[in-house]
Length: 81
Image 1 (cartoon, rainbow, N blue to C red):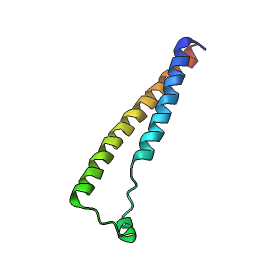
Image 2: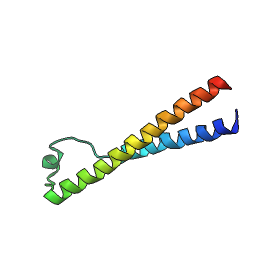
Image 3: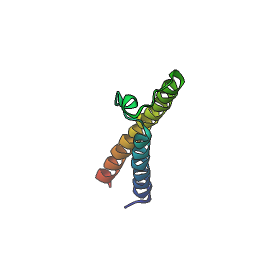
Image 4: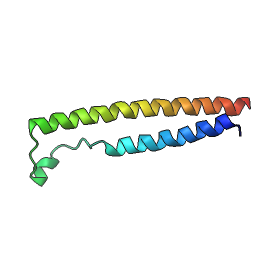
């Protein structure tokens, strides 16, 4: 294993952990749970949740794209070397 492969492997692990964390932080899209628990969301709370979810969704796409690129580069490097 070359140094580049070790660095890319480490980045791959970090990207996988980042994807897991960002996905876990996102809220589920289950309707009607507020009615069951008695918590009525205000307009501000709903928009705040949407903005946080959109931020996390953007980062999920970014980390997933980086993950795919790293996997492809590692695959190319292992076939060459």
